[in-house]
Image 1 (cartoon, rainbow, N blue to C red):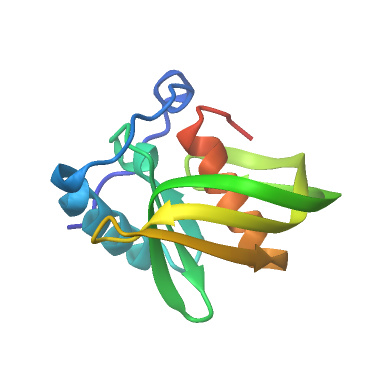
Image 2: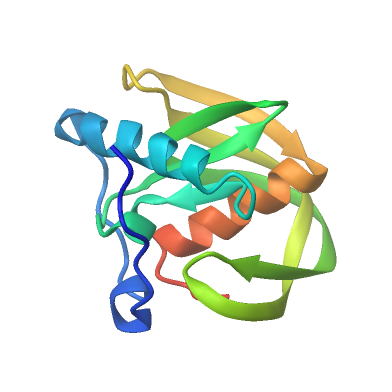
Length: 136
């Protein structure tokens, strides 16, 4: 189901709670909403659709990937990026890492580790900031 995008900075600044199996519908809604906004958005966090849970979805090699309870466990190579956000107007500068190693759970809540680089790593970091209540 496609959900409305939250624009309230007070809501978006709240930290998200861990995702549970009861949040699987939210994960599916997140992907539906991301697909709907594909022309102007490459990643989303659950708080962007009004749910304070640690769930992110993003474009990865032409497909959508969902991470439940994502955490960056290792990072290298700082650079400065300029990013926009569907929930907030304008573009802002921020620091990002070139390479990140992620811990996350898939939709079956099986633990996974994977390393991402470049553009995909930047998208993931932006969405994790959302989970942590950090507005860019």
